[in-house]
Amino acid sequence: LQDAYPLTAIEALLCGVAPVCCALPGTEEIASETAAISLVDGQNSQAAADRVLAFNRSAVDDGARLMRHKFDWTTAKARYRAAFAGLASGAATSATVDVTRAMPR
Image (tube, rainbow, N blue to C red; front, side):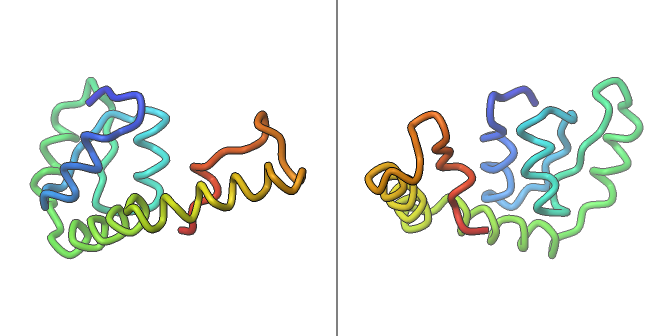
């Protein structure tokens, strides 16, 4: 998979599929949060096949639950509100606000 942010991996989890992905920055970030996403060297097809065969339904279910929480509208609104509150109070500048980091985990 190649995606600026690994939307394909997130969508796969939400559909009940355990994604096997190349180790790219965005994918590495979300893979560090859930065991359901497997990272492999893009040149090693045997490692990718091994990860597919090691499919773990409960890890996929847990990963899907995490992604639903992390990216739902309520959580997104809370992150944006926190970011804008920081801007309004002067505690943050537009250069320092990162709404992806303001989201509860």
